Length: 122
Image (cartoon, rainbow, N blue to C red; front, top):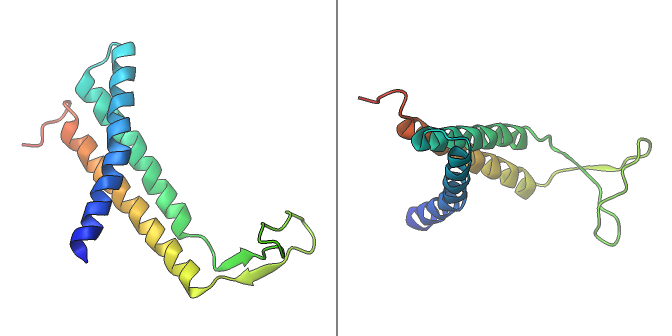
């Protein structure tokens, strides 16, 4: 069970990390900056964004809007908003999604620290 989960995590990490490196390199070349520093800043920005996103996803409350009869979202109204309690599955999905965002953000921050040439790790 852990090997397939690790494989999915690494594939998501590559799906986020490779474009981050490419965009960072392009912006670093355009701004005439150090490439290692550009990659580090890219990892810092994307990693911290994922950490913040994971925080907000994880803090979603247990109340959800009611759905219309056809399955679409209810129209946002200030008065007479119909709400319902989230199911156990929705609560677990929220926690799991938050954990994935936080883990990905943390790994990207560590990669940013490792690739930053301003400070040496050893």
